[in-house]
Image 1 (spheres, rainbow, N blue to C red):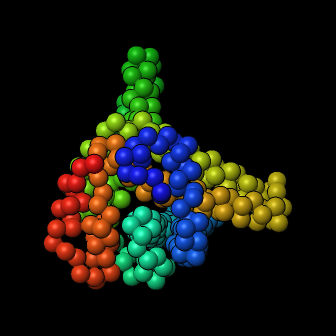
Image 2 (cartoon, rainbow, N blue to C red):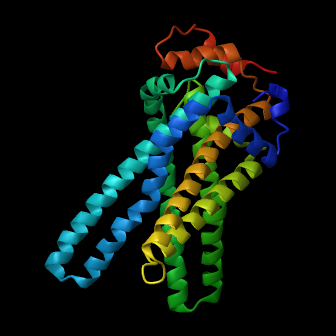
Image 3 (cartoon, rainbow, N blue to C red):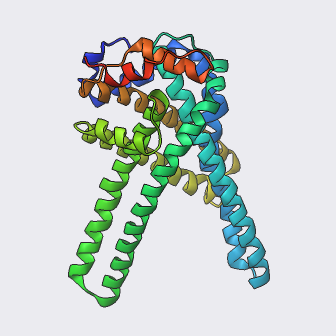
Length: 318
């Protein structure tokens, strides 16, 4: 990002995407290795896990009670391992990309080795932030479930007014609240890496940074979720359930193509959330002292960090 801090606030969605997609050109080797070792496994597992769960579901439906119990145990074990893998690699990918982008922004030497060396210290901060976001998501899902139950009751009672109210509530909860929480989480993750706060404090800071830029954030998140949703649906229809319609070779080609698309989408998504952080900081006239950020990043690598670095990074105005 060659733009001055005060110019970043004026970036449109298109400009943000252009800036994000241009970043890997500054250190292609580092981003290639990050993509190969972190983002590719994450994207592959997200899609490929249904290749294993779908046969298990089919076996459960065709089994008797004793066999079904064994199959359910396998399914829950597999799903648990899947969620752990997704959780770990999501945080690792976020840590790697945010740290690398910030290193480029501050002209700090960039290499895959230095990024991997910083991840253990970054991971703890992201994990604590994720725990707080999870608590917020639990509350969201509780309200969402209540709205779904209300919709079922409305259908059962044939109450058109209650049905309409529940339908609107579900729509708003998913389109507005879910998208906003996702944007809050992504920005809080960047804050957790680049500023001396994490957990609830990072969420609070993210909430403040989103003010005035929430519409752009919502559009970016919605488009990202929509593309991921389309990729997942096509993968399920062609690769997982398309055995009777498509040949093995066609399914392999389509599956490989869709995994590649998801890899690109996830990489760009991580780059966009990094760029968007700088846009929000610029919009709120919170200048980023590059030397202070440089020192802050060095702290993850065990380098000496001056005492004033974090204070400068928080309070410097443009």
